[in-house]
Image (cartoon, rainbow, N blue to C red):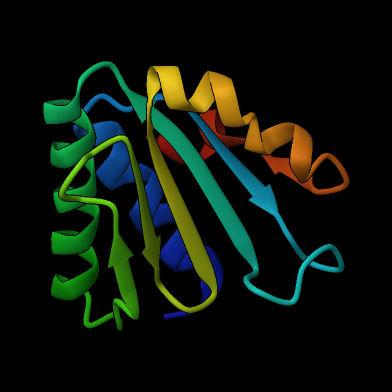
Length: 117
């Protein structure tokens, strides 16, 4: 599975659990860490946990390597490392505070709506 296919899987899994403001950033030429960053949020710790578990479940079903999953115990900021895709699932308050999209302002945005149609 290539990085674009992994991205589609992550976006659909997040959308299935009603993640809010799903943003995908193309990190090509911006960061050597990953090809894409996905950023979204839930309105409660329960929703953040549900989004995180769905992404992990779908990734494992597709045979992807989940290198790391951090933050699930507090469900305020969960990071899922899928090698070439790094997913950040925030509680809405944490997302407003950290503003990762601004930190990675050099990255171009992927049209998420186009993927989810």
